[in-house]
Length: 162
Image (cartoon, rainbow, N blue to C red; front, side, top):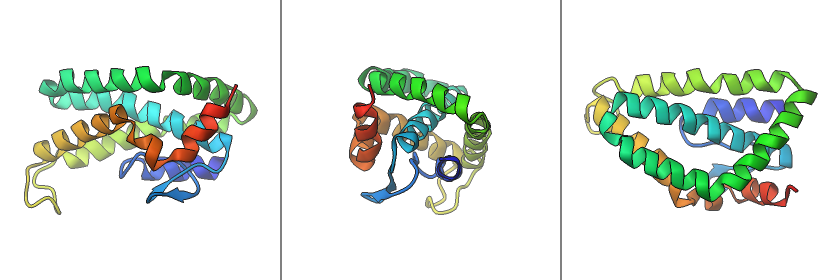
């Protein structure tokens, strides 16, 4: 579990990462603990990205808030299950909390680097344009439920939790 969270935290800025096996080109969960860690990472990433994206591109607030709330409403029961199980995991392995704490600075660094213009590999688009698109896509993906398709094992394990 520790290795899986570290891998997920390192790769979270490229795509919302879940640990272990790869499904449809995205890392997926191999266990309940992996699934819980992946959802915890997703929730923390969404929290920080929401704050940072709105702070950097205020005009995105209505769209981001709408998609964030749609995701929280749709996946709320699974997020709550993951939070409950996460608390149990942290009681057993307190070091896990430190790994999740590293997500916030990683997300902020990623957004900082994106906001610098021009960004290589984007046809010379200025950083704010790239950042805006990245923020919009992140929350649109959450709201669309595409992560249920990209990482089906994460959702399967979470749905099976009592």
